[in-house]
Image 1 (spheres, rainbow, N blue to C red):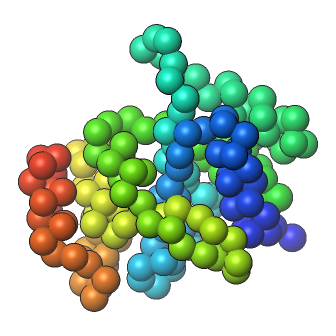
Image 2 (image 1 turned 120 degrees about the horizontal axis):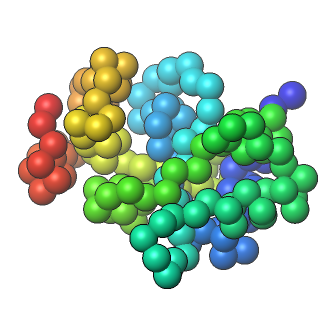
Length: 163
């Protein structure tokens, strides 16, 4: 049986080992911290990687670390304790800031970092990611009492994202 807690522990261990500089849980799994959870296939983890020397981003250190721990890979996922995890290197200033401003939360006693709802909304609505499913998730987040509407407006304006 899959263990989400053990998966989160492994992500924390990856950070402690220096394989990733920082991370934040994003996507559908992050929703469970802000609104009613929705079904999802995998755990999306936005990551900041140690400085690279060129323009090409390689996830090879993540896959090598995972293999040493006995985790398998399946296409773009690393399967950690039965949970498919997709490590997404930060791809924009918005994603960088979403990781840097992530909040600390706990899931069954495991400390984790989670993208805030304001940044989740912006990440869902950037043109390259905007799908009907993500628009619906952004709308559900906007209706939440957890939203800081002033912060949301600031993020949307600074990163030129439209509702």
